[in-house]
Image (cartoon, rainbow, N blue to C red; front, side, top):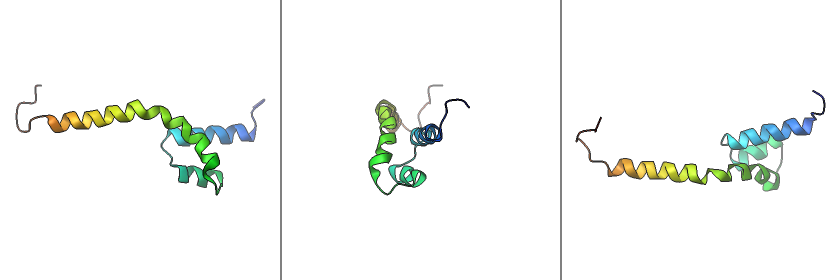
Length: 74
């Protein structure tokens, strides 16, 4: 695999786990660390989800505001 090292594979695996929703505790377990410091390096990858989370919250509010039992509009 050329210039690929074990650490590169480990980093990629942890990055994919973080973006897949792994919690800090789960990342710590996967990496074999007892400190959150290393896990937080990967957690920063999911910080960009703020807009996605806000959109989900907004969708839930809009659903709750819809009249029940009326025509669906479709």
